[in-house]
Image (cartoon, rainbow, N blue to C red; front, side):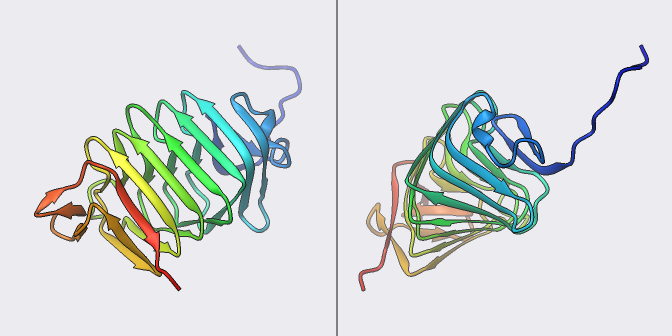
Length: 206
């Protein structure tokens, strides 16, 4: 049936939060989205998504960067995303940085799901899922760079896996002892086996 009332088409910024498009209407206060609590906003001019003491509980992806090349996710305070799907799928090059903590939990999917390169800088990141931090197949440019970051990742099918490369800048894998990124397995491995226990990466002592 043809619509004869007023039709409103809003700009869509290329990000979804808890299954909802980020638009001009909601970007200044994303807590209006169902399942989102805390201080969360998006600035389309600087491509910056800021989250401060945010809790997202959703059956959808928590933060899905579909189309924003160079997205900056700034993390302040304590933030938790609990999702039935991948908590944060990254389809365009992105950065997660800040002074805060980000906890990602999913029972059936990836905590952090990379289709491209991602830099994680300075934050404390805790990831738990069927896969912890994962790419697609480790062959399409899924490059994870960690700079002075603290990361704990656990995935029963792979804690840090399916990545083309893992670059550690100012931080080191400390658990399991002796574990390292294995380019052939595209994963953090120990004794030739992909790690499915907790992987801990800590900033180097200064």
